[in-house]
Image (cartoon, rainbow, N blue to C red; front, side, top):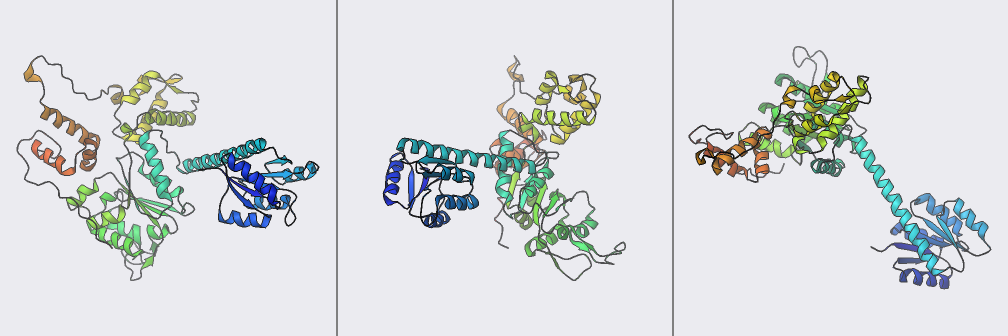
Length: 475
């Protein structure tokens, strides 16, 4: 798109002369015959540069410059003045003009001056954009990552933060699902409201309803006073339900109704209490499989799964392992009074090759231990946990001379599927995505192998592959 210039001058001949010169040099030009007309034009459309004459009758160039700087300070203003009006040019610069030209205007210098002003605005916009990104990253707390997988996560957080849509975060244990939930909250319009979190697996089923919805006085033996639930406490903010896959089946219809009606009914009360909070949930379970196996309600699944965010395991994040390791190393070294502690090359190589089944949480624990045990100015291989030092990646090696010892393609496929299932903690939907299969095909292969996890048991199972999940009925 062409750079846009607004020309302002009450001299029609001068206006036509400058407009023709700039148009020939590739600029898109809009002309106005007065300051008032220019201000009206700026309300309707944006421009990249404003070029105004100083000596106008109705509104002087200085007055126009002051008005523009006060309302649109990001647009550079160039003033044009006569040879004997340098004091006016200086005055215009003092109120915020970007540059000035003297009459008669050299058209080549005019083009260069306007191009320089456009570049100035572009740079200012880029600085502003980078500052906004920095603020967003600060809002994401301790989340770190430069891998392609994490950049996709950061991008989705930025895109979903401004909406009110419910978000389902799926990821293995230890990947940082609560950090993601806090990042969504901190970058949203609700960031000044409360962030209320609960782990559904950590609360006994008998108390979960009271925790979420509250209770009336006397609702049960220990209910000596009325208590508001977490949904009410999260008003104006975000409520985060971690490990929602662990929620008891009998509790799920109550949660579904609360989300549909935007009201909760405290235990032991006849009064419904409205709430205004955004829902973010997380799970390490394959909820589609849970729905198929009747352990999770299908209608609730579709209610919470408006936007799904897949958090990658640490083993899929490449160089982020060392990025996070150095971050944790610096934090624990500072806390332990071991500033300047670094990571040896051998230790770094072993950390990079390890599988990290416990994900970021395991890496953090590993670095805390390594800093505590470090005897020198580096964390060495000896300082790492034994299972990391002894770790060897699984590989298929064909080295037998006897053809009878070479594996068949079916056996290689079975072992690879078993390996993928192990890496995704048995999540069949995720495994199917990694393998490039649909879930029905994966289930058929697992049946052929004689086990749901691809084991070596003989005999096919009698269960049939899961049918495709039907679309949610409108609420």
